[in-house]
Image (cartoon, rainbow, N blue to C red; front, top):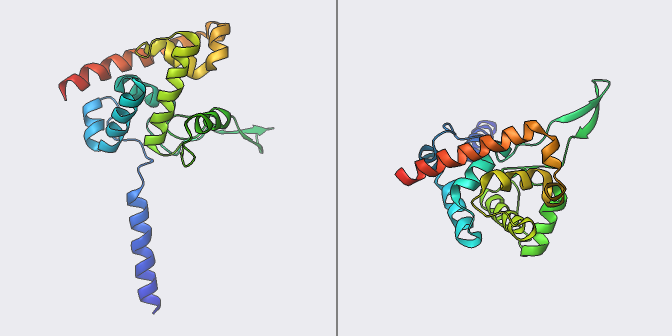
Length: 191
C-alpha cells in the first residue's frame, strides 16, 4: 500500500511540475520561436488583438519588459535593517504585472470575474483593455509602443503629468521596449 501511494504521489508531483508554463520560454528574442514553443501565448495575443486592436508585437514587447513571460513573477520583498520583511514593493503579479487596483478596475469594467493575472489569456486581455484606455484618456495610438509603455508604467494620470520625463532610466527602457516591438513585428511577418 505504501509503495502504491508513493508511486501515485510521485507521478502526480511530476505531472504538476511539467504542466506549469510559468517559467519563461527559452528564446525571448525570437517571436517565431516563442510562438512555436508556447502557441497558447500567441493565440492569446491574437485574441486580444482582435478584441482590442492592440498589435501582437506591442503586447509581446510589453510582456517581455514586465515579466519576461514568467506568469508567476512578483516584485521582490522590501526589508528594514536588511532583515525585517516589510512586504513586497508593489502588488504587481503575473505576465502583465498589473497592480491590484488596476486589475480590480479591469475586472469590474469587463465583467471578467474569473480573470487571473497568472493566465496569459487574461493578462493579454487586460493589456488590450488598458492600452485602449490609454488611447481614450491620453490619445496615444495603439501601435505607439514607446508611449503606450510609458502610460503602462506610470499610469494614465502620471503620464499626463509628465512624471516619466523626470526618469531618464524609464525613457531608456521605453525606447528598448519600442525597439523590441519593432524586431518582434518584423519577425512575426516571417513566421
